[in-house]
Length: 589
Ligand code: SF4
Image (tube, rainbow, N blue to C red; front, side, top):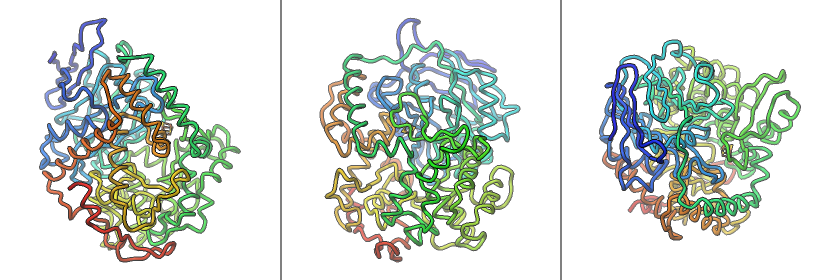
């Protein structure tokens, strides 16, 4: 362990100059200290979610108060970050979640993951609570604790602008907006893209944890970092090339590249699984108005808009976008399917410009659009604002940043809103709101919502139909447990490698590509890895998380969807969620 401490700054010695050294950086905000620690042997093969969840389970008391000084916030780039491997470099953020009370990992695109990896920082652990709001400036051999004067009560856009101006164009910035400062439970952490738009680690209230530590932002300056060590550079290049070729051959790629994730609006609406009117219907009549196709037409006519945009270097799919208004002023980047589904269809709002404005405010204040979208729909069900009234919804969202009773409701998420307003139909599991896929149609996804260690989370295992897998019936009542279990392990591994989930989807339909992925990891780490590597890694991560949750008091009784999904038939397929509970419970037995 190497340590030098100071008041305004802490100086760290990452290793001998000229020798690549990978360390864990531990920052304590109470003591204003920063240490570089050697990586424990058992952590060497872990990255991303695998590392954050393992460290949280070893270092954080499962019974601790999530917003108290015993909780820790851990940032870890995926194993492959900073290499030529395609679509990788996502940054995992882990903590005990104040939204669910369970373990949490949420990951984001942007450049911070790759910057940390190139600085030789395998994980950044943030402990303690600062006396007053600070931000950290981290370079390859130094950590500065800087006062957040002038940044407080500012949104992510302004915060990023100020820090970019001060620290230059070659930094990555992680920050929270007003919601995190106010400790609202649906708060997110933003990280910058190469062109300094915010991307969010949105789920689980991790921005709230950052706010509770009085940490406004982290500026990562990778200049002087030693870069990433690769055991077999030629082997990695060959595997990455083969994988990239395979990914680009998948039939979904043109849709991702052309329309972004918004292509899912029409697809999920066709399936009858688009949450509408607080999950009481499965199709929105005017879905075409919020579809990817309509958005692409609109953006083609608008100055400065980009229908296709990369959130990080090395991305092959460019599923993001830059949404501008008719005058060419940037409104948001990017406008994605979950926001269209939950702020849009689930609230019966079919005006793209209003949804884009709400998305901008959510990114700026730093809140999760999934939890806020579902919270708005619940408030509409309670009669607090009319269905489809986008302008009033926009006013409510504005109150998250500006202050106000309505903003305090929805900024604390869907469960808080439902409980406060006495609503019976509240779409949450373990306190986290349900994403934009109705589990009565997509029953494998429903099993994931019910059983995931993260609460309702489609990224943990979304069982979508695929033309390449015609035998899978997403509406069948049985057989969904094993499908979800496989997907949950697969995506836990993908999250640990730091790969973008969208680029990993082709590997499900073309399993041979998994061999290229495993060969690439092997070339990076120098380890001999067999065909079972992904499942073994994912299963290990899930078990660590499950044990943490059990110690925090969760039981199988928490692995259930809200009652109304079992009781109310959906109009589109006439079905309730009827997967036997034994199939769900078998996942962790
Ligand atoms: S596919 Fe989309 S989310 Fe994934 S890396 Fe590219 S732009 Fe980011």
